[in-house]
Image 1 (spheres, rainbow, N blue to C red):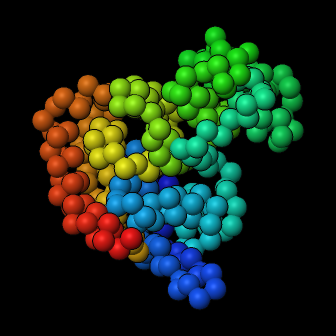
Image 2 (image 1 turned 90 degrees about the vertical axis):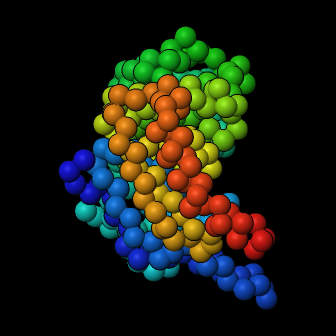
Length: 264
């Protein structure tokens, strides 16, 4: 990790009130650098602006203050080329097969059919979905459907992959296995990854660094470096060091989570 891949400086986001409702200061100011090729997780209390941070970085929302850059260029109101986003919600189309779901964005962009087939076949193989290429989403398990959602983004070959609670609906064992898949994807593609998660142990296991956010309006409280080897997997959760990282995250977040709960 030698250079900055994406940068936020003084970023704030305020949601306008409806009628007599007061505006909501959701985020910031936030300063954050994502280093090229790193795996960064973001944790914080519910409602602290984690997803808002991702939306602003992805170009899905405009900041009310500050600047956002990806690969040295300003992000202004649209998703930049090279950025892929995966959300928690199942975004697959139930009427399309796994193969057609995976190739949807490429077909919409006008890519030649042969090129789409080659890229989709490679991506489904990478995600372990080749056997299910002609199946429909309803025929897949929850974990497999989430792998399909990742495949739909991965097929576009993003250099920056943004994930918003992608495993939130899965059971703990499946989350650990999906974490292994995500780490393999990260290593083999070389993409920079930013993961939004509520699970502190998940953040501790997966990340090179963990950004800890305050209660709303979300600001950056801490950046925790894990010092894990790049070839890590879910077995690291059994090591004492992983528990220490998780404990540090909770030590910072305990009071912030209480504030967030009382503010509801």
